[in-house]
Image (cartoon, rainbow, N blue to C red; front, side, top):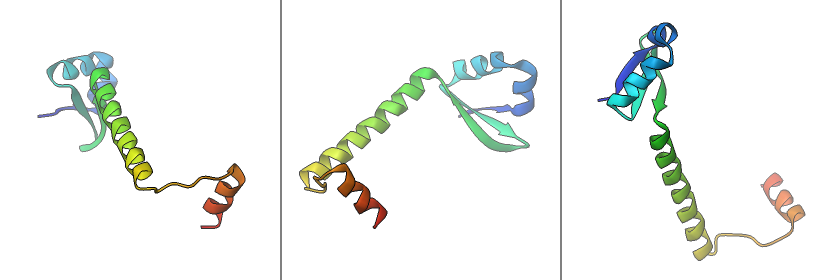
Length: 85
């Protein structure tokens, strides 16, 4: 289960409460007025998620290339194509 930290606890206790929450789990939710507002991740977890995101983008680009879903042209042609779409 994700750790939950209130905005007030964060204001009063500072970064130490984040360290405490992250040590129990790789992420914590910061609540503001009882509603989940932010997620704090450990740097390792953030880097892992970023790597997954970049791998997915690379796979999508490779699939587009293999399917022939790309254009070859000048910068001006590209600008015209995207502004006149």
